[in-house]
Image (cartoon, rainbow, N blue to C red; front, top):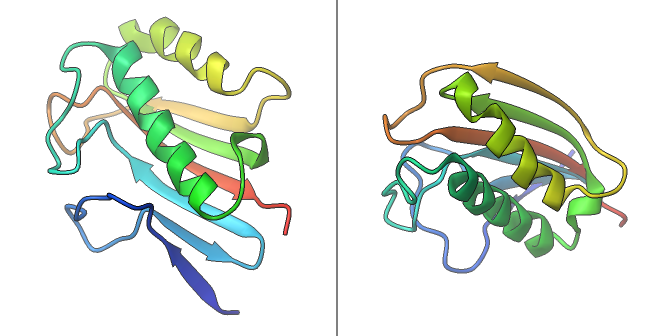
Length: 128
């Protein structure tokens, strides 16, 4: 099955050998997305809600580049640094998924940069 890399315009170079998204047929896999600017600097240090919004906007740009929308997301993997941020993360998350929610899991773990509080990876089933 052929796959296509999905890289939104203006994306920075990743820290590791991966692309923001990979599409096979109508399934889009969005790589783990951290609260980085295009130079891989952590944004909104100390603010889990703002970092979550930034991450979800980056994920949205990958999905839209592939021709989909956030309504096409069927699964999210959420990694958070501190359980104390869980409520703030969920409040922002709910804004991006106001209707039927995708399946998901959420675990606490260390992330690639100490100032990153959240990482999310997504799977979307695109309409075409």
